[in-house]
Image 1 (tube, helix red, strand yellow):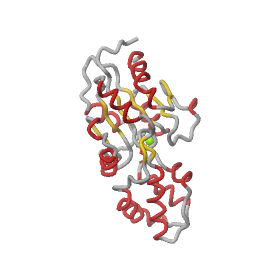
Image 2: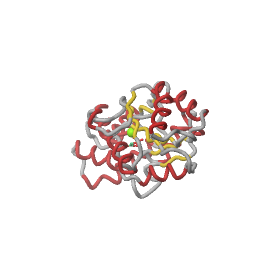
Image 3: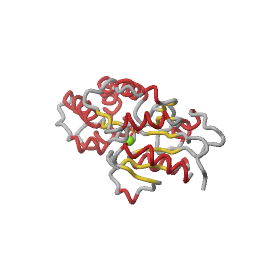
Image 4: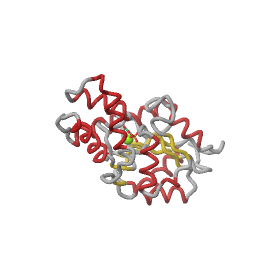
Length: 227
Ligand SMILES: O=C(O)COP(=O)(O)O
Ligand SMILES: [Mg+2]
């Protein structure tokens, strides 16, 4: 058992973990569908398409509608003009800001690793006043690879310049993409259970799960102590 001599790096997912952004993503998708006279999708449908980034989202939207596959690139471009600053329907999950502040105060280096493109990621972090808490932010278009490839998570950990004596970094996320990414990177995973996951909790490999960010600082300390 490792003892946590130095606070370990903690890297967070964004959509479905720190923020409930599905209502904005849903509204932006339906605005584009309206332009093409396609009936709207439900919030549950669109929420189920989130996790793999914008390209996968639109592959799933196209598959669920009568839109032609060839329209993909234009649809994504049209979506991005709306999505890049869409924050009005997005909310931080309860106790997120306090939990992040507590971890930062205790010296944990915090990073962000999301499949959301970097532009809208930075806008939403600024919108909620939490951008300055993250020493490194890796978006879905920061690297050629996206989660569940381990490269973005490894880049986030490397960007935090972990102290050689620090225990292994932790990854905190909500989805199958995050669990697989942590597994691929060989890092412990903390699962937030109120996000956009479709798989039962017990089928996802995780060190701990939680449904309230008020519990996170303690969970991080416990997980870091286990190493
Ligand atoms: O934008 C997405 O599809 C997912 O974003 P996330 O990696 O922050 O969950
Ligand atoms: Mg997520």
